[in-house]
Length: 336
Image (cartoon, rainbow, N blue to C red):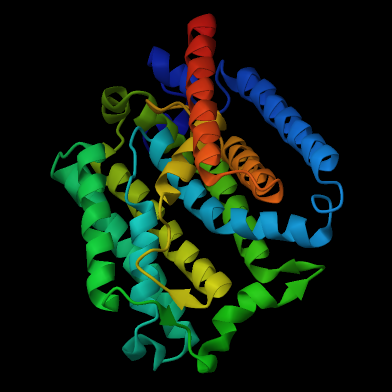
């Protein structure tokens, strides 16, 4: 058992970084602000499109859209709290979906398809971790290279064609079509991933070490943490989430495609930042990231319902990201 596992780290930054540090109340206030922002967006939807926004079908659509990106966002939260970044998540999801929907893989049935998607995502995440932790590559460069390579491999495997999930493997499609209490099963998968992510981050040694490594890697190393091994596991976790997300996108679209997950890495990173996770690592919450994701998803939904241009959507998202980072920096200056 390391010093970090027995007690809070003694380093000044590590002490402030964890969920129970001096930023705890700040995080709670930020969550309330995010809930207020969601409420305001809901009011805008009710005012501008009362006949469409509050319908059960639209709310289910919002949750279904949030589910796929949300699973990736959980993994991204761990990586960024741990002091890293992962630009390859969208491409890894595409690669996993293509690999799982090849005729060879589909011939073994839906269970093998799911296992294949998860293994491909996790394996690629492990490769990211090896390059970063043991190859000492900058996370931005390593994951950028993986993003390009994985997208290219997906295009090569699929011959740039969309691969359909065969009728014999309808169990995967049922994740999207089967509803329990009015919600598709994929929403419950998303909720389970969020719950497990919250428990791991807040109630386990792995979570405490993640905050420690992100807050001050050198102090974490001196406290007895194997920083390189932990970094490897963080990227493997991110890859695992990409594999699960690939299963959900296959269920939603009934396809595997090299175009899946386009710009998902930006949406996930933006959701994490808006949720209050520090880009330099050491601070953040799963709940904040999911609230940030829901804000982005609702904004996208409002733009669609009001027939606004996709370009305007991107401009609005960019402005929100800039505002979130500026607020984050201001909060840090105030509480340092």
